[in-house]
Image (tube, rainbow, N blue to C red; front, side, top):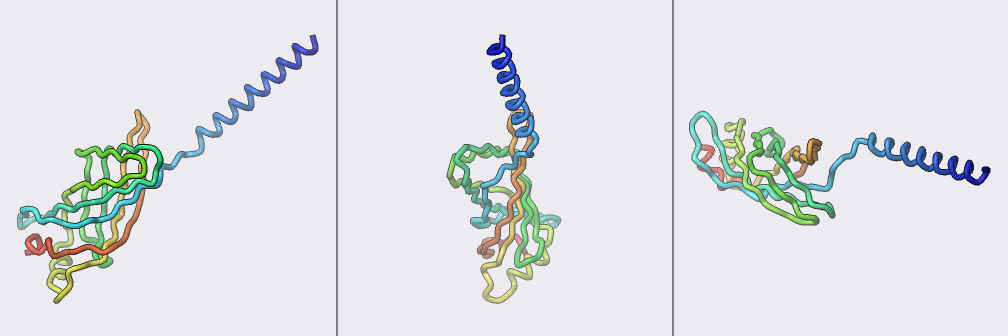
Amino acid sequence: MKPLRLFSRSLALTLAFTLVTLVAGCGNGFKLTGVNVSIVGFKPTTSSKLEATAVMTLRYTSENVIPIGLSGSNHKLYLNGVYAGKTQSEEQPLGLAPLSTINQDVTVKFENLARLQQLLADAGQKNAAYKIESVLLVTSGEEKLDIKTTATGSVDLSPLAPVAR
């Protein structure tokens, strides 16, 4: 009887340890990272007097070894340290292959048109320093995750001259 009782205790302890490990692993708040966003450039669009928009080309770079599907994204744009505008993309899902780079065109709404006009009016200034704060939305079944990232760089503003008029 003793070997059977020892086996039962051993099995019970193994099952209990597995259950505790599984429960502890589920509660650790998985955080998805490893996707960077940068600005490639701008293209003008038709704009009205009430709102100025342009097409902003974004480059997504995945450092992950698994594919990621983005169901949408939100971006805040700063030019030379001043808030310039925002964009939201939920109508164009985007798939990122492992260790890959892909571009996406989004429409940015300039909310600080006076600042944009001032940047373009500065003599000889074609480039501006940018900062882009992005929230990338990932939907996996019923679970919704987000990737928050910030990037800085320099971008050519000369294509925006028609927008700022």
